[in-house]
Length: 211
Image (cartoon, rainbow, N blue to C red; front, side, top):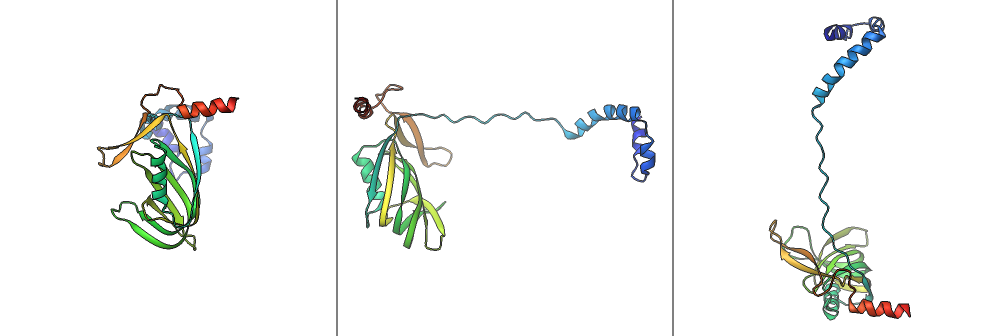
């Protein structure tokens, strides 16, 4: 029956001959041939859902500050982190300008130094007394943008307006990752603090706000 069906539909056959095919026969042949189409399509592979990364949460304490002309961007951030003994922090925002941008570009070992006038268009990353990891992107007067690892030697031109976030229930550490050997981020609960317990500083601030 399938051979007859294929014979009716030879490429050199006229449309008039196809139109003479009885509708009932046409439906039955399609019913017989549909399972064969599945063989050509191949088996349907079941998709395994991706593993969800493990995440830890914390209350957020924020700091706002401004750097002045001549300040070294990275050195000032490092000094602030040490002064406040921040073991788990993050950059929330930064806008400003530089006269010198010192970056380690992707897959490069040494620094690249750029001199001129640059707008800070992005500064992101993690902060910790155990090691910070920051990326900076700047744009020149033509709008050309370049970015990489923030290094010492980024000199503020007019200002750097910064908001930092501290995660007091967590601790950031750096440990070697066996994949490439780099020291990568490890997130842990801050020692000596029970899950859901607020740090002393946040307890006091909440008590004041409730009075």
